[in-house]
Length: 399
Ligand code: FEO
Image 1 (cartoon, rainbow, N blue to C red):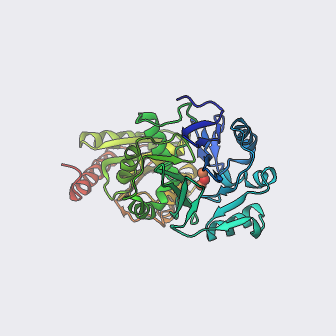
Image 2: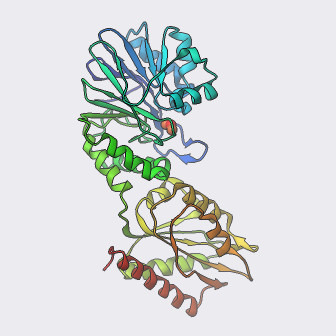
């Protein structure tokens, strides 16, 4: 089934009525969107009442209205707000103007946030608790609180008769795909992994609990609020179980920036030394950083090595920026090492490691070269490669 900018039927009485945003290239003015994104909203028409599950980012609200018109929707009884972030909730005020009889259904935390963020009156809300059901006639929505995917108030709806989990951000992918259903393609897997890495990874522990909470639910379809719909839920559930598990891979993410080639030489030498020791190396030049690629790299790499030249007396700001991002994403990385060239003196190591306040990592011996690296520096890099291998062997991921 292709997915143009038109309402699309998911199943009888259930439509995707949201909007694609093919041209958007940045989310939160931070996260790259190489493949655009979509803000999925779902219309569920029961025999007695109609619910709209989430809205769209405000600039796309006219598309949502157009889709509702295409389907001849005259009344909406409920707008279910799974998540207060504005890419899903931002269209609610305009929707309430157009459908003044609609009530906003959310949990207590969601209600408070929507009142703060959208200046909504308390009287427009129907507040629901975890596990509560909402009957639409021949269709029933059951609400499940799934906190921290992606904010503390987030919840999902389970449509019991059709066995569809409307999961909002959870299991989403920033992908403006022309295909409504995901299938099991590599492109969808990578977009979902990028989304997990950029948005979900800091909440790994909470996601594990949420996966446990939905594990016995008979789910035929997972319908997230970004990207394609999973008609084979096992595909995305297994991927998530793998990403959130404590398992790390025999991999090093080697992220470096170099001003005059010295730190680059060190990074390249170390990469070869690691590869000789049968360790997979994912190398990133921070001068052209795609945050998403770096985030994907650290989803399950055992070790992060940063190549950081000293600028004046401290860490190169591009490396510091990457370190701040890594710290915020809280990957399950176990070991960190710093390498880099300096001109006279400095506090690069103290500065960089001081940024890793939220990581539970063991710091390996740094390798610092004065100017261009020489024989003694290469020997130190060989020792670092040995140390990485030994650590990977200790935790049973390398031979
Ligand atoms: Fe897609 Fe957290 O909003």
